[in-house]
Length: 238
Image (cartoon, rainbow, N blue to C red; front, side):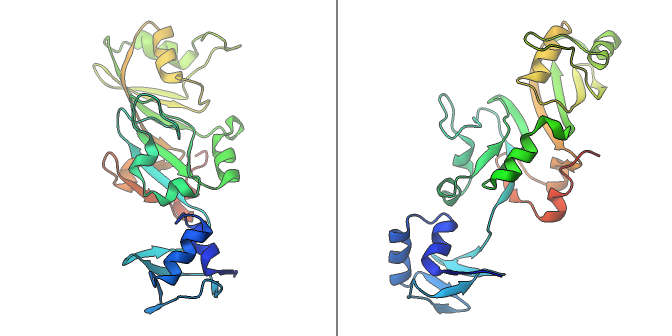
């Protein structure tokens, strides 16, 4: 268990500078166990802490771990250039506490995107050494053929890659639909592999990371949820 002053707690949760957080406290905006707390120096136990801020319930979290169902035409960047950034889909407190995407999805790719403010978690999840499988649904411009699947499974050579890259699994789901499982996480990998195999990816969706599926989270496009420890444990190779 740890105790922090109330202003530090609010700052850690993304409610602004310590000066602004002290103003919130002075104004009686912070309620704990049904009573307003107006002394910012008060040491509060963070274990299991639930506060009411601006009449909304807020659960203290040392770090946040988030799954977002990313829509199309949203950029995985804190400084987007052509489309809205993913942080616009989250509460503004997450910007203050430096929540970042774990890896990237192209602006025109939909599906599961992890986000966190836990640096070691981001580094570990992003590391190619983990070999975490990711499942994609790809829509192809031309019809799927047995030859295309065979090429993707045996490996295709991409520019600037020293060795051919192969899918862990590749299954036809429709005339123009493929389910592809990859573990490398290279830049634009699915699109580049399909192009190298003589086809074109016209739409792409990531449906799972490790053993955690987007369907199990029940998120519609643009929705997000916190991930508990059991769900984070699924973000490992199967």
